[in-house]
Length: 220
Image 1 (spheres, rainbow, N blue to C red):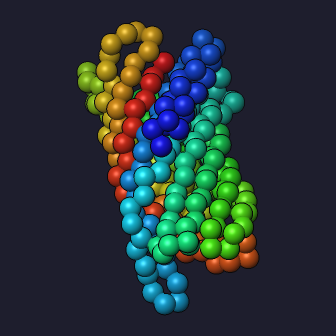
Image 2: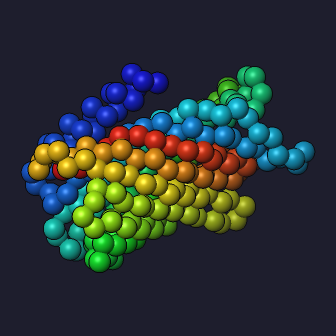
């Protein structure tokens, strides 16, 4: 886990350095999500042991108003209620978005479309499957003036037929003003994710993952 996390931080940091010269703002981060999985079936709800899953994110903001900004995320969510029945959801989010407010009175408001790719590895069935879905995306942020402290929340959501997916997060972060070019920071928050779908492996999945996450980030 630590080696994967280090490689992820190094990758997004290198990417951010390369593109920062041509864009107004670049941020990237990575960390660990300590989540508790819950599975709902006709027999009731079962809770599994807490799992440590990794996440990586990066976003690019540019000065051209017509073209959307871009945020990219990678995360995993693992569920193992019983031995030999683990399910791992690997998720990649590509999010083009617009700034409705851009640090206006210290408030940021983003609205966009999340194109989410879900790759499922079901140990019990011994099979894998993929699913791509569009989700609505909303993010808000408040930056406390004259400090490095900020609060942020975002939500992604779609519901159709018997399928519902949502992913909601709230966090606090602190940026250290060490150099004028690269500013490191830390973040801690809480994340809740729901995956209820019958479009993977011809099986109905009704899972919820929730827990605290923490990581490091860089701002350029």
